[in-house]
Image (cartoon, rainbow, N blue to C red; front, side):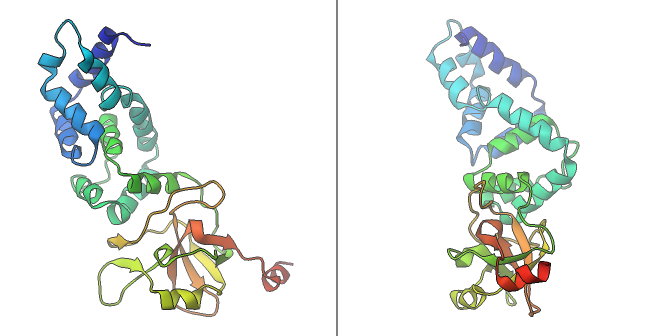
Amino acid sequence: MFTRKQKAEQMKKIMDSLSAEEIRHLCRYQRTSSLVRKAVRLLHHKDEIFTLPYGDEIDYYYTYSLFGLHWEPRLTKAKELLAKPDFLKELFNQLHYRGDYSTRSNLKQFEIIPIQTSEKTIAMFLASLTQRDKRLLKAYEEEPKFQVGAIIQMRANIGVDAIISKTGYSSHWQSIGRRELSKLKNKTFMVLGNDVCTDAVTYATVYSYTQSQGGSRLYKVLPIGETKTYYITEKFMKKCRTKAVKDARK
């Protein structure tokens, strides 16, 4: 348990370590994160807040701003991401096309994948992620549950938002219609890719991750005997256990 003096010293140390560029990033991210908004407020009013004797504001900002309890976990995560540049690139691609609008806007500041970006900037970006964005991060942190060449089927509870395609009359990706879904539900598919990303803004639900079913990782699949491919959400895929498939594997 830290004293108010220790909490104040920790927060001041973090703020004093920020460069002008990092502060600019911080201010940009405050639109979507209460943690960041409170950190910006603390930064702007630090002279009056860090005045002896320390008051309740120290406890409040230590608990509810990015510069308190929440700083080290995000900084640690940022270090992990920067150590895996290929994964970081994949994550930024997914967020660019499938993340919330505010996150897509924030990503525009990175003209290249920020391999040389500071750990603190990435930590601030992580603090700005919405629940939708965090689901994408979790989905791609975990190993894919299906490999290329696997034969799969859809789960019975799949909805139109879990299978997407690029429309012929628009530049974005979106869920297929109910009529098309009903035709696909009983088909068997082959996995063509498990690290795919859409190439335009995608309007479809991002589902939470579960250990047994997976999350919102997208797979490129081809219905057996057909030519049109689809992208299916991992959470609504299952291994095909039909007799024909079992016999083919013998």
